Image (cartoon, rainbow, N blue to C red):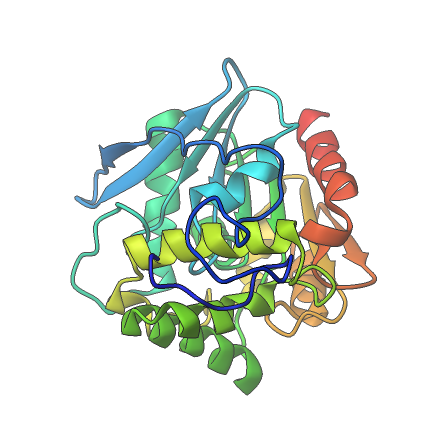
Length: 295
């Protein structure tokens, strides 16, 4: 990151490293990342884990492709009990066994984290939502409450736009070029946020994580895959579920969320009217998730 010079600082100052004019004007230093642990799973893959909170119930949180513990923690901020965050294989400090991998492999990761911690509730974002669906198709009664945030794929392949964007991220990270990674990751931000201190801080955090930890080659085939062979298998899931989507998100189309909500007998669907809800509707999103889990 020391040679990073893109994009220009939000205050328009010189592009220098360190606490000079190029630093975001946040008024406070960044908090250190929490200490995590490596946990050996029954299927032999060590996964990075962070446990926060205390008591019951216990909720496991599964992240999206190219994301991880840091970007998933905000979803659990208002959720009661113990929260179990982890990194899928190929992310962070988790193992990267020989690939390619499938959603069945990711479902094993979710199941292992849930079983080892005694989790009775589950949250899945994007890739994590697909892995959770795969697990539920095999064990429909595994959890007592479920939240699916921005599901990306079920039993139909992604469209070309989504596949190309995910492939671009994987290729950029593999290149190790900070400017190239930044160009791809900046698409996660609303245009109005990109040149603000908050947007700059987010971009730096994502770049630090991606360039430090990388993304394993075994992830490369996932954008071409479906989460499960037939979404009708989810009809056996009687658990209350909340499915969240937002209009205008090419990576997470609303029709996928609608299909998932229709497949789950006890699902409630909420669709926000614009994308980037973590920036535009953060408070409402947190309250919606915590209220559902805490009922």
